[in-house]
Structure formats: structure tokens, C-alpha cells
Length: 278
Picture 1 (cartoon, rainbow, N blue to C red):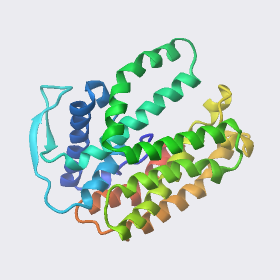
Picture 2 (cartoon, one colour):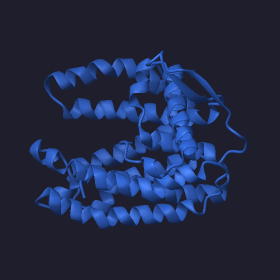
Picture 3 (spheres, one colour):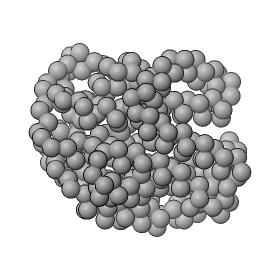
Picture 4 (tube, one colour):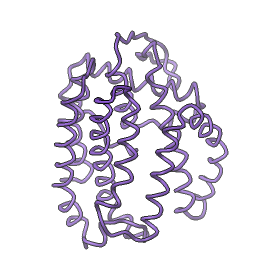
């Protein structure tokens, strides 16, 4: 996940923004506690959304406490007392990080490649721990990486086909947020649409850089310029957002509905416009 699932800060109430920050900081703390201090550096807004979504489908009130920040002891932050709902998102973050490092080792050269090779042993233990805790998530991500790599090696030029592994992986991960069969189906659709959104925005954003470095990018088969790539992706991003909103409305959200709605109805559009400079 790449940090494209964000809030529209100006449209949130102060108390809602404070709750969002509390979940973000709590996820950071959970990562550090279970997977080591360096794991905190992997935290992104995408995993904060996953954590909020997981928490929103659970009963009960989430109590908040103020403690000092691990990175800045002079600062106090709000944290969730109960971190059970943060375990799955933090494990998924570690699994995704492990494969990101593997991917960078393959793609990079020189000192950058060496740097990622040195990181691998550090996070290998975290990967094994996360895999043991959530074998289903490991299975989904393994399948996603294998299929994605195969399609890229084949130089797949079909946008729908190459975006499908990311979308399916996220759909299955979202399904882990509930045990209810009906809700699982809705989460599957929500995850699929948001996964596709993430893949498409990332492909358009990296278009120029991938061309310069001769890296795979599905948009190069149909677009000659970055502007063409953005125009091709724009209507599809709106489709993903609209379908995500439809799925979200079918969920039985028990709390944080305004924060999640802010992300889906406003944040996704704000983010892709900012990232693609549209």
C-alpha cells in the first residue's frame, strides 16, 4: 500500500481529526511494540484506513489515553487503550514491507540495492512473526505478488488484467475485518475498488520515472506522455471512488463513519488530484 488513502483534513471536525491521529499514533506504537522500532517508519495512511475500518465494525467504545511519543518524548499523543483491532493492520503492513524490500532489491542497483539487502535480515523476523499471526493475509499477499510479478515479466499491456492482483489482494484483506458473511461480501467489493484505485494512481504517478528508468508501466503501451496517462486514468479513478462509496454505504458501520466517509467521499479524489496535479 502506497499512502494514497488519506483524509480531507479541512472537512473533518476537530474531534474527528484527533481520533484519526490517535489511531495513526496507536498503529505506530503497535508496530514498534510487535515488530521493532524500525517498523514504525513503514506506517502509511493506507494502513490507518484499514485500522479504522477494522475498528468501525466492532462493538464497544475505544478508550483513549495520553502518553509520550516514542520519537519525540517532549510531545504527548493520544493512543487507543485497546489495540486488538490494530494487530491485523500492523501485520499486513509488515508483510507488504517485506515484499517491497524484495522488489527494491530486484529493481535497484549499486548502493541502493546494497542498502535494501542490508535491511532484509532486519525485517525478515518481522515478516515471519506477521505470517504466523495472520497466515491468511500472508497467503493473499503471496498470491498477489506472484501473479503481479508474472504479468509484469510478460509485459502485460492490459490495464484491467494488471490491476486485478492488487485489487483482489486488498479485497481479501478487507474481508478479514468481519466474520459476518454479508459484510464480508461488501468488504470484498470495497477492497477491490480501493485496491484498483491504488494501483491506477500509482501507475500514473510513476509514469515518467518508469519510462526514464526503463521499468515496467502498463500505461506506456497506450500513452506517450504523462498527460495522456493522467487523462486515461482519471475517469477510471472516479469509477473506483464511486463504486467504493456504494459499497461503503452498505456496511454496518458502528463508529467512525464520518472519518471513513471523509476519506472515501472526499479524500480519495483530493489525493489523486494532488498526486497527479490535475
